[in-house]
Length: 287
Ligand SMILES: Nc1nc(=O)c2c([nH]1)NC[C@@H]1CN(c3ccc(C(=O)N[C@@H](CCC(=O)O)C(=O)O)cc3)C=[N+]21
Image (cartoon, rainbow, N blue to C red; front, side, top):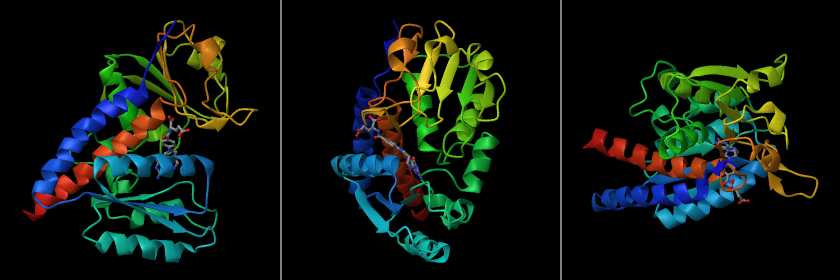
């Protein structure tokens, strides 16, 4: 039976440390400010915004949600981003993805000031990650949160075979870069991969970010593997589930993350910590 990685408990512990940093900044008159820009509505995004708001309030952050209609033009959205680039009370800007079809995600992420890019999606920050220059660089919150889980559970990465299912800019690609920087041997797979199960069965660590409920079954997993589930799906009954068939894989893995209470809370914890870090870095530059 696998050890269940308790993302919720770990997140609560890490939030304590972040809260202390918020207090220290307050002594210097700085309140970390986070704006989440939400265009239209998407299920995962709604859960994210709700939980993020709750946590930001607990943490003592200045947190706002800017809701915009799904019909907004790209130029109008970029104008909103520029408004927050100029706003000195805001240290962190997050534009919820996915965006409606008429808006080019690259144009939007590139419009965010890299110093306020709390998601680490700006090409400058992605480039720094790729060349392993990660100090003072914001990094995509989900992959970074997963790295924090590995560390907290003493899961070694050096020399390990890691298979990542999913090649998105928000999870798969930054995840691969972080793992390579940690000396893992990384295989990125996706919807065009031939004989996927052959690859996943070789993985010491399997990270699943496809967005399809129960995509990974026990037979896809090497006995004793570490299984990380990034999925946020709905099952037939409308319940929130991951991409991994938890009940069967649980018997085969050594460690497994649940959904909910696994990767999701760690993403939010990392978002909070990175918002505070951006505020700290901006203070140092000015002072
Ligand atoms: N620019 C951008 N950055 C993101 O990081 C980003 C995004 N856009 N768009 C949407 C996805 C999704 N995402 C979630 C993070 C945490 C939970 C979360 O808190 N999950 C809880 C939810 C439990 C519940 O409340 O039902 C859990 O897993 O325990 C959910 C979803 C971040 N995303």
